[in-house]
Length: 114
Length: 112
Image (cartoon, rainbow over all chains, first blue to last red; front, side, top):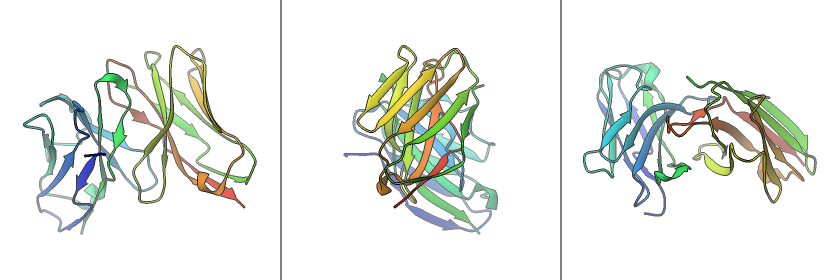
């Protein structure tokens, strides 16, 4: 596709439920990133994939958060036992790893935990 | 790890005037400094970036300056227009880390 695509755009879930957020990067981009953005804040790094492997998952806040990228393209961010504090916009970005760190963001998935 | 501080948090200027947003970073190994513009409910969009081998970069009304010694970089917008109103984020990274660390953002308002 022309840009980074994220689904769903909005998700409302009950506390304790399981949520999956999907990211489809720009075609040919080998690097994929997940960020979380709370209202009035800058994006906060969660995890970075180079190809299929998680090269850096140091930003995942706890073991309720997990992400996969099994074929090196689409990625899924999974959140177990959601809490109200997980409410935020989850942004995905991708980049061509051989062009430095120029990242292109998707529109985000707005998660609300009630 | 890297820490990026951004100032001011809000900035209001008259249309046609210039706006300047400043950021400082902590990791001397950082070598890439992009600026993103984010309109309400939209994705962050890259507007300009600079790498540590240059001190200044300009693209039409937008320029970025970098002072590696002082570890700070700034965004300059000249001849501001109402469509420049948005939240602007600075960020920093180095090749080894790949990830970007963002500042807290500056809400820029251009008054007609």
